[in-house]
Length: 363
Ligand SMILES: [Zn+2]
Ligand SMILES: [Zn+2]
Image 1 (cartoon, rainbow, N blue to C red):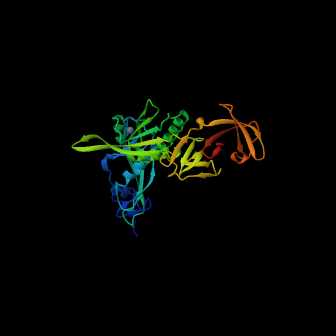
Image 2: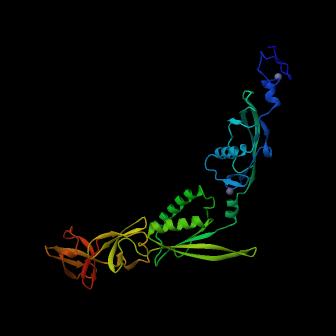
Image 3: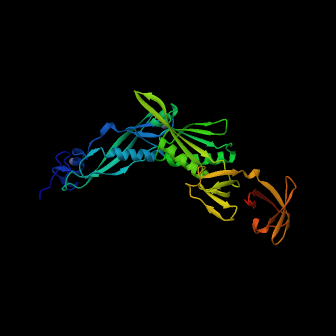
């Protein structure tokens, strides 16, 4: 076979394989793998306020590393780059971390590999792709700074103040729930927190589903009830805009309080994950209610623990116990069975007098 030469550069076959009249280097130049680069490169927007990034108005939360988000957008962009079929991206140079919330530019080198047809061995093409980041304000920050809210979560307590300990616990739940939700729901923000003078808290929330979840999460931890209402906020372009309010009512009962539940008299032993455990004063048995039953609608406060009478055990006999009321110094005798088993003389305990006798409230 006669020695063939490249029609472009004159290289001989002994130097480089000749395909369709070109040496491989000239072939690659003559027939680029990349046919069209859309939008003159990757155009992104960064939010001046939160530093999040968007591609074509699709915002993504930037956590620690914005380069991984840019990488995701870049891959989405590369899907739109027109290439010769069977061409693949085989390498992308490092993406630099852009400055926070301001416009910036950088370039990445992308290496494509492929071949237009079977006769031609695969070759590579290098593209220097500009990544331009413009500064703007994301939808969420726009709404957030404008004070936009879809829902209000009100936290109230029935006939008492919210305790500091409860407030701290509520803050913890809010923080945790928000961090969880922000990953999938960018509107899961709280634009305003208002502490009411009488001990309530109002949270103005960007998204009503987040508000609903948050309200039920708080309610379940406290055996609270939720009241729901929808109110007209404004009218925009002739259309009414509503907002929803979730009012979480913390119950007025707490651990140690006496309550009525289904006609029985109980002392609240525990409230855990929204389920109340009740101690039956008459049978001395405990039972844990379902979350549905552990609400102020089902459990009615009978007496606060702090209003129970305190007694000291004077003498403990086989069948009777003598106790002295520590407020009135009056002495009473009750059957031994009125008290729980493990008691010693000199111990203090709480009792309640009912029509059928005295009952110990051991919690
Ligand atoms: Zn050539
Ligand atoms: Zn933002």
